[in-house]
Image (cartoon, rainbow, N blue to C red):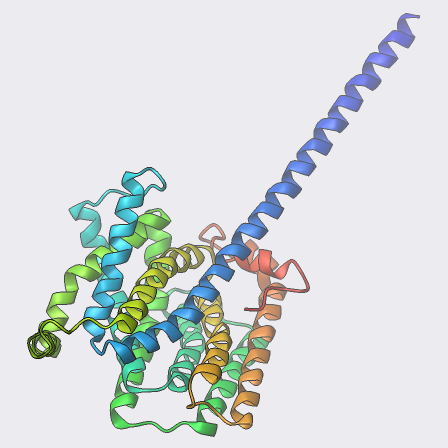
Length: 364
C-alpha cells in the first residue's frame, strides 16, 4: 500500500513538472509571437510614414517654398509633442542634460544635414530623382558598415540583391528623368549625408543608452536649435521677411497650412518609428526598408503628378522591388549564423531573424 502511494506521489510530481515545462514553452511561444508582431508593427509604421512623408513634403515645399523654416516647424512639433506627452504621463523620455546633449550633438548635426539636403532635393527635383538617390544608400551603407563598424561582409546573395535594387532604381530614373546642375548638387549632398546618417545614428542608438523617446526629443530639440544658423547662412530669413511685408494682412494660405501641418505630424510619427526601427535592425536592413517603401511614394506620384516615368520606368521599379525581396530572403538565410557571431549581443540581427522566420516575409 505504501509503495502504491509513493508511486502515485512520484507520478503526480512528474506530471506537475511536465505541466510547468509545457507552460514555459507556451510562454516562450507567446513571447516570440509578441516580439514578431511588435517588430512588424514598427517596420510597417516606419514604411508608411516614410512613404507618405516624401509625398507630403513635396506638396508642402511646393506650396511653402522655405525648406529651412519647414524643417524647423517639423522639429518644433516633434520636440514639443514629446515634451507635452511626457508631462501628461503618456510616455517617458530621458531628461535633457548638457552632458548627454554634447554626446548627441554630432549625430544631431548629421541628422539635420540629411533632412536639410533631402528637403532641398525635393524642392529642386522631382520624386523620381529622390527615389534613385535614396536607392543608392543601402549599397553604400553596407560598405560603410563593413569598413567603419567592422560588420561582416554581405554574402554574395545579399550583395547581388543590393545591386539589383540599385540597377532597377537607376533604370527607373533614366527612363523618364533629367538632372539639372542644382538638383544634381543637392542629390549628391543628400546621398553623402544620408549614408553617413544611416551608419552614424545606428552607432549612437546602440551605444548612447537613451530610450526611443529620448532619442526623438534630443534629436529634434538640438536640430531646432541649429535651424536659425542655416536660415542666416542660406539667406532664407530675408526671403520670409520680404514675403510677409509684401503680403501683409493676406499672407495666410489655407492649402499651405494644411500641407505644412501634415508634414509636421508625419515628421513626429517618423521620428518615433524611425528611431525604434533603427534600434532594432541593422543599418543596411533599415535603409533597404526605406528604399523599398518608396514604391508607395512612386504610386502616389503617378496619381497626383503629371511628371512620372514611362511604362519602362515602372518596370524598373518592379525590378527594384525584386531586389528588395531578394534582400529579405538573404537576411533570412543569414540570420541564424549572424546572431551566433554578433559580438554586440545580437541587437542588429534580432529583427532580421524575426522577419526571416516566416517564408512569407515582410515586404514593404
